[in-house]
Image (cartoon, rainbow, N blue to C red; front, side, top):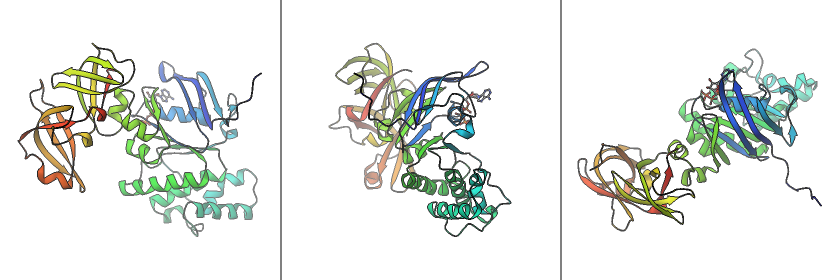
Length: 366
Ligand SMILES: Nc1ncnc2c1ncn2[C@@H]1O[C@H](COP(=O)(O)OP(=O)(O)OP(=O)(O)O)[C@@H](O)[C@H]1O
């Protein structure tokens, strides 16, 4: 007998979705599940298909193949305005001649909600986005971050199940962008609305999301928590796109029980690996700047380097060194804490950086 599963339906499910624009395959057979109440981000470079994905979910585009489900319901032939989604764009486009509260309540008027109820709801939402008492102002009397919060309140007014956000912070300056990350994250947790957020900024995605899908050339590379993407990248693309890293190329000599040995012009190194890595394959070892130590004693791996320069970042410095003895000069980054800086090799000095095999991952060429 079939027993119905107790699992609630996904907030968004994409099943074998494809999108073709007359010869350009913007989305290549993509499947994805976003849980209810999740802050889910799509991270990828310009042109990889992020906005297309968002438009398929919102209903502005119909997939060439495959299906889109929202809360378990197939969206085939459900028009955009009948979907339980709201969208926030890169350019906020508040209505300039309406007050803040009228902007927030705009979607409610179209749904036949009376004026006093609209006003009450707008005030409630303005409180939610930390702008109580701002209702009577005009958009021109707000800062960029405040305008952004009004746009979010306006999107939330229609009580969407899923809020689709298309790089909403990209027009803000760096400081405000960092501040808004925390605000968005808090707001998402307070409301419990599923956020589907697209960005090409990896630090933004890592800071805010419960899970991130990394996308390249219309296909998903990996879906995971920020920690998983950072410490267990599944592909070379993810390893180099998410966070700072150093790549050392070579050929796999052996691999067994999750550990592999790589041989290349810079030496022989040991690192973690995933199933499927075979001797003879061309591969790269990735090691993060903070996993490289200024001392090689006691580590399985040792990389011969010459110190080139230090870039100070406050609490720590990023040292740039070049690989000595390799076939071509390549730069390696090391993070050095302020405490260890006085013991760092001087510019021009040769040294060996050590790292543990657990802190390195060997991935086959894409
Ligand atoms: N209406 C369209 N007609 C033809 N090609 C399109 C159309 N919309 C998007 N594309 C193409 O599909 C691909 C994906 O575009 P998309 O806008 O989804 O990328 P993106 O990841 O959002 O990029 P960005 O970060 O620059 O906004 C691109 O090659 C783009 O040129």
